[in-house]
Length: 445
Image (cartoon, rainbow, N blue to C red; front, top):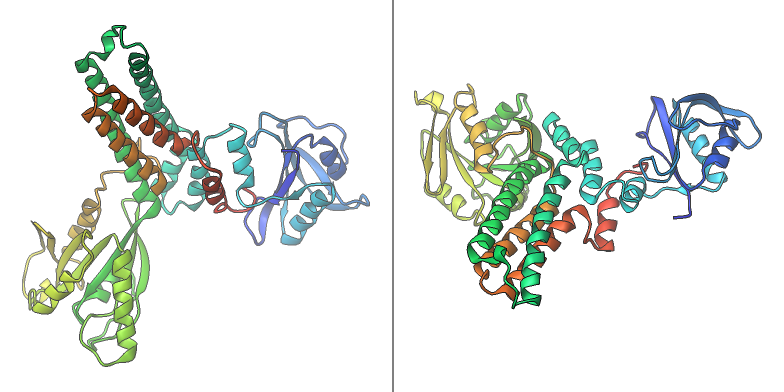
């Protein structure tokens, strides 16, 4: 890459400090032109004036020079750290552009780091995940991925697959040679170890995906069963309007909460009933739209009435595969104790949104129903494409196991499994995917 890129690397708006970052080849002439200094010690913060083309001082701050290849992008990198006023930073950036740099595209600094083998693709994605982390646990998981823990686990699997593939391919090329390792028992045992290790990686990645994406939970039910009261209780504040008038909630109300570091996106929806009110009908249509996008459906029922035919009709309309939690609310009015009952189609939880009794049962069950275990060491943030690649690799390895006596088929499934795993870190990745990934970064990263 011959061109030099520049961008403001700090958030928009006013702040105490602002940074203009530049990356390219041979940046010393640009640095001299802006700072007026001829000598620049690598990786040493230097107090300096930032000058315009006429030599007038734009700002006073710190310049940091990182010569290639020991920099984030693998190219020469310089940061001009000045005062965080938008006008000042724009003037410094414009000076860089006047000296031959161009404005960086979103994610271009990180993309260059990836293309220059400073980080792999999974690490590159973790940069934006760290920035966007919605909880402390998510930030820690993103940092583990950025440090390469996820990539190391994937590379370890790939290395084991490569060794197994070499021996399988050798058997195909030299069938007259006896290779002791390929006696069926040993080959099967080695493959089983890889499958088990892959399963552990998938479990950790799945936990990280929950931390990154959060859980979409939709509250549904008939009017006046306590959906808005339950949302307020879970959120810890009065978000939804609560009245005894049916149809008070006309549109979906969204609120974000955290349980053990997992972000829950809660949707309080319009009560489902027969209505001639056009606005209420629109609200109910939006309710079903929210249900279609949810990870979990929580159907609230009046504990005094129990399940009605209308409740059963609502449950029957739910998309197949979506977990259902039935919440029997208002137990305080009927002297019922909070409890949880597990059954074939889901779970029943008895609680009071008014007093809070039993709400912790719901909180815990919401995490259990999506397989949440913990946010301890070994959990790294993962994206849906990572999970899909791990699923594909797992499927290929199972097919390889089923065809272990048919070496040609086994060899092909092992190759496909390796290719799927390598797509996570970027060894086998299309340019289109790279463009999609890095376009979601902010400018300056």
